[in-house]
Image (cartoon, rainbow, N blue to C red; front, top):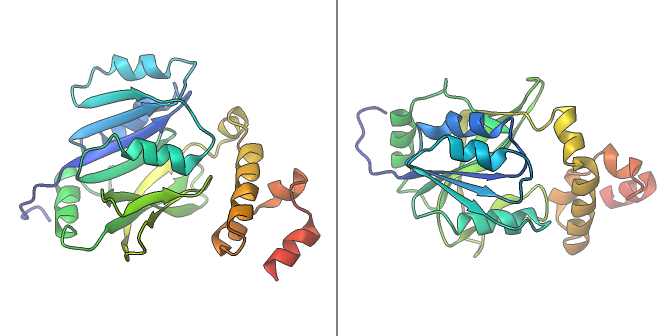
Length: 233
């Protein structure tokens, strides 16, 4: 990988709100990999913005945007602020694992993918307690035919049904958003559950949303066990 020549331009994109304890570590974890850092604050009331500005990074652009309770909409608005090239999307409560590769290796890898049709790489998102991980499509080349979809648990999709070239990688990030304090601070079970129910009503035949239902939905009274079983059938 180190011998390849490429002109990959990589932008790190972080959307943030009230993450004064985590945002600096998130930024620093991808700083050396990215030519540009685009940080979008969606209404922080703590020291998040102050902490970002304290870094005084020349390649960092900080934007402010009013929050709308629609994750795909917000992600797509953020994408509009990013120049052409490759994008690494990181949540503000995540840290990129630098042990897998250095910046040169990552860019040369992306350079090899430039000939692919709509290349989208998945990255392992590992829970903070290291008990489980999921794969998310967070490393991709910007394209007018790619956008986020879903009120919650949003995912990159093809706008015009053009095939995406999805590459599973061993790159990983550590997710601190699953700790109890973060879950309670943002009222995640209630908010995510209500958004998912709304999304299911919009797309009742999409199995992705049904697969996202957890015990929270039943506990909150948003769906009964009987209703859930009927949907599975």
